[in-house]
Image 1: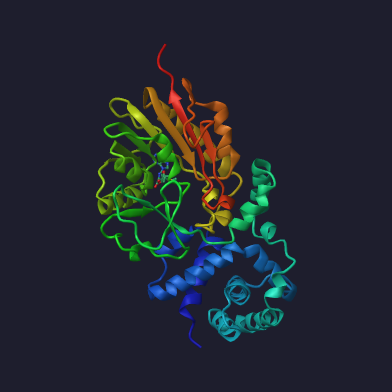
Image 2: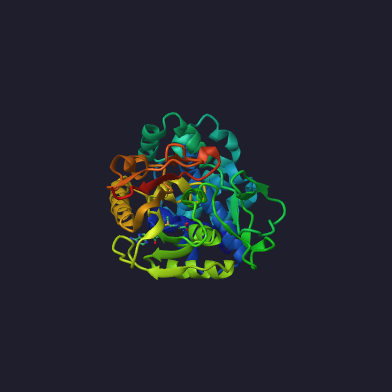
Length: 399
Ligand SMILES: C[S@@+](CC[C@H](N)C(=O)[O-])C[C@H]1O[C@@H](n2cnc3c(N)ncnc32)[C@H](O)[C@@H]1O
């Protein structure tokens, strides 16, 4: 039987993430050529396996005497996800999973998946899915930072996030979306942005409700000179440019800068683009306002990127927190006296968020604003949006 292309794609994606430590996005970009429909189906299966890996492994465990070879384990996880979570008819799920393993492994995959079929989704009942599907170091860190909400956070990670849009001022909203209070327009998970009317005309861009908050808190005014540091792919640059500010967007990575350029071209929004390390960038003159959306572990975006828990390691947190502090101090040097600085990370880790409040750049203070009465904000996925930490600071006027 020829290998089923969607399951082959799923297996390729799982191998890339779990065995080679590559991101799902990168693995999708470099996947072997195949029909778009098969690639999309493979992506959906792989994403389900990554979201529910601990639960699926616990469900398979009673029928495995020892750890099977890697290709068989991938096929078993794919088959179990389809049988227990995705509602694929049993015959199709088992035969498709068997089709992607080398012949000598077909017997074990077939036998185990038949057992899983007999047991059915009931095998998942009674498992502590939230804990099983969350690496223990992340669970402990979220428990320390967010208390009992850790369970609701883990539960939120089971579902794919909706598609949130930010609209250009005056744009006609595409039909069918739910308008959220801040102006975000929400569509169900799985909605393809490119198929919504107005996409090609540059009327809107994808941006999670929480990701829209940092630029809103910066509150850029028409004609203000604003720097957007760590800018690609450019959701926040677009907001600042749409507000009428004169934006300089700084991004270190050439490929990502190109994506930022393409996004702004589609949106027909102006900004000066600079390829530079924001920690060393030395422009002429200071800015009315600076936005720093710093690189981070991205543990606030797991609903959108289910590979994140499998790729990040505890040591990444302090390394990124130190980078963020260096970038924050560099960003602070660019702000005029009396000017604003907004710092954000899409992380649930306190070290990448609340801990930075203990060492604000010299000469800066928290600057309360509508929507952030204490001068900073924390959002979490169990509130229906990505997990962000955002602080709004103001440079004191010289005495
Ligand atoms: C969280 S993403 C930014 C998302 C972006 N602000 C948006 O709203 O679309 C972080 C970005 O920072 C870039 N980056 C990381 N370190 C940097 C540095 N030292 N200088 C400039 N850009 C950097 C990364 O390449 C990445 O594109």
